[in-house]
Image (cartoon, rainbow, N blue to C red; front, side):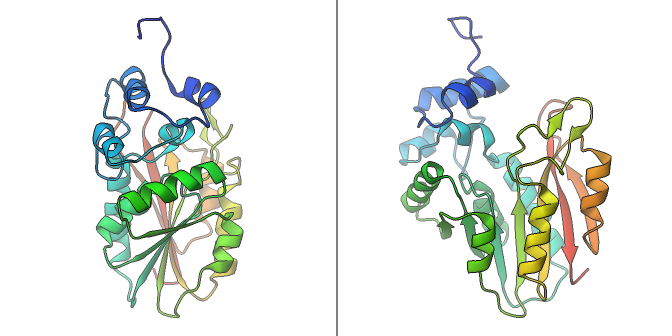
Length: 254
């Protein structure tokens, strides 16, 4: 609890400082008050004090919504392990809702020869992320487009493996009763998958869809039915009931 009696938590950042660029004490205070850890918002392999010193900056919404290092690392490991079983000449990584680009950073850590592309529609988030990636000289391309336009701009060779990390805004899709309803994200996860499949029909695809510890069963069944193979992974990184995970799904090669 802070001295003034208010918690510098998720709701405060989303409502009061959503589009503000945070100072380092604000990032650390959010981590400490919400999770008991000043280094909670670790990204690009660095704790907040280190990435801030390198010129990296985050908006309030990105600090709350980004996939932090420990989770992105776990996702990257599982994605790389799943991708190892398919023949391909090269790998293309795409994040249709890139945000900070931290998940792409960790996917590249585990798939270092891949090409990484992110789409970010929000102009403010895009500008900051573009600047952050340049400051760190990271080999990630970021485009200020929506996911549909981004897919249309992306070209693949016939033997490429396309890996998509899909984490659209959850909005009101998460409830205490049913968990995360993948049909109510913005846009619905299944809509994104359908557009992806339509854009890259002949290609080998591997999707990693970020989910919550509890997922609405009907929406999960509907999602998994679209793949030739799928698996659910949940990572024990937070308190019970507050953990995240991924649905891994392959099409065209499993």
